[in-house]
Amino acid sequence: MITFIQIVLSLLLLFGCFFILVGALGLVKLSSFFKRLHAPTKASTLGVGCVLVGSVCYHIFLGEDPQPRELLITVFLFITAPISAHMMAKAALSLMMEKRPTLPGDETAKEEALPPPEPRRDETP
Image: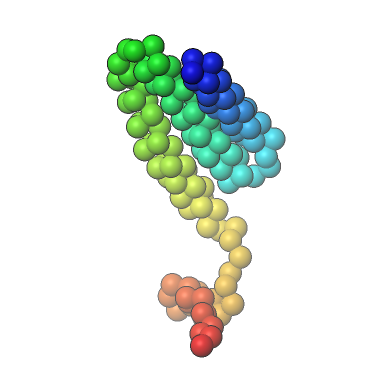
């Protein structure tokens, strides 16, 4: 039984390190800001989550209480990573407003200082 638990903990650490490495490579290699934003937020969250779950399981395996700092790091990571990614994406989109292509029918809205029209949704029965 002890060997099985050690194998499971080792697999958690290996998966965690793999996802952290993929997130770091994605941050370095991908071309645009949005691709670079996506790689570390998704991959490293899963990677750090696996490492922290492995650490908590290791302490439980030793018969100790799970460390509160590990649980707090896990909660903090899973709350803040998506929120920070969302805020950075919104800031980047607002900075790129001039570069966006115009929608068809937007010319009259610019002349009258109206917001752009909503895209048409074809209703299919």
